[in-house]
Amino acid sequence: DYLMALLLGFDRAIQRGLISKHVMNRLLDVFVGNVILTTEREEAARSLGFAPPLFILVSPTGKCNLRCVGCYAASDPGNHASLDFDTFDRILTEKRELWGSHFTVISGGEPFMWRDGQRGLLDMVARHPSDLFMVYTNSTLITDDVAKRMAELGNITPAISVEGFEEETDARRGKGVYRRILTAFENLRRHGVPFGVSATPTRLNWETIVSDRFTDFYFEGEGAVYGWLFQYMPIGRGQSLDLMVPPEQRVAMLGRMQRLVRERKVFLADFWNSGTVSNGCICAGRPGGYFYIDWNGNIAPCGFVPYATDNIYTIYANGGSVNTALDSPLFKQIRAWQDQYGYAEPGERTQNWLCPCVIRDHFQLLKEAVCDTRAKPINEEAAIALRDGDYCRGMAHYGQELKQLADPIWAEQYVDTPT
Image 1 (cartoon, rainbow, N blue to C red):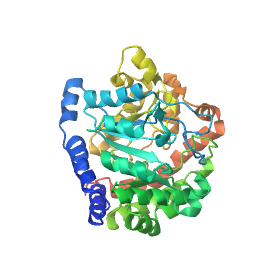
Image 2: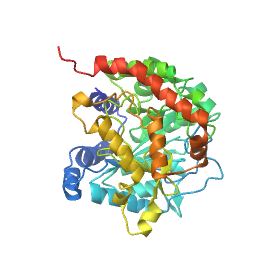
Image 3: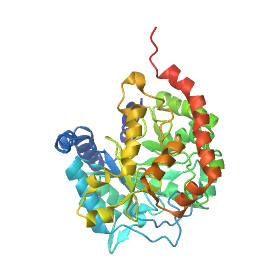
Image 4: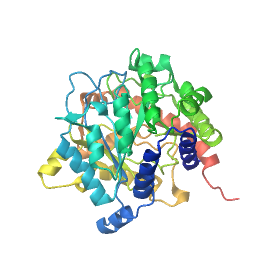
């Protein structure tokens, strides 16, 4: 269902003339040739003796020109940390040469604010022409000139952050941001650059995001090819469990999202509710999964798990590589749980992948792993969270309540019961 929705999303954009011929040819070369049909990853697995991750999520800068409520990056004008160009470049080169990985996801901060001297994000994209880059961005810096260069490169697609429509988006991101997003859409369409949308469902806006109106506007109207949903996670500035999509509403959201994918044929994936698509949690460097490197070089299991035992600068100083990060004690403990929970088990022993997330749905397990491995919080909010008894109890209760609601759905829709 998801694969067909993604293919049809591109087909709709092509039929409307929203993807230039040059970009389409580049996407076929890079995405299909180097990501989908390549044998490099199989060859890398034979060489390494284990299956490597599919990609790395990199946030090269903590700088941002917005101050969104609850942002996990805790972005603010005083946060000026950024990866240097050579380190960023080495990360991308190593994962391609060591893992056969030609896919990179970029986040932030605001990625288009990253610079090292005169070189910015698109200079890094140009340096790695055989790779595909998906960039999570607020889009306010995607001018006509930026969109034109993205089209010339042809190996980059932006996932643009929205919160619903103008009222919801401006309420979280700032007055006037929504109109600037619409301008970015227009710039990208003009130059034939495929784009998607990225939304953060909360208790307040989840119904809007999984509505037919949302689909009509962004996919059918504005021409988005894909959509990613990241349910609000209380780990950033001003964290509050009250903004999370409650378990009962998360289950309702699952049903509505599945209908949009199956009936409306739009690619709308949720990092939590789509666990059945990804075979569960994909963090901590799992085969086919990923890990996260932030603007300080901290290496965390996931963009939503702000704890680390390693730093890429320290690894490089000691003669290591991105492979060294996979030996993180925290990563190993999480991967052991992933395997036991179902990833390495036969189908009949797979546990509920509607509750896939190690921090959101199994918080106590994540807390124990962080404490056992003495992982360090990568920001002050993460440190506070571990010390906050109410927060820890609330997160654990959330997972327990969700399990009670999701287990019957898992049993009915996914478990093959003998007759």
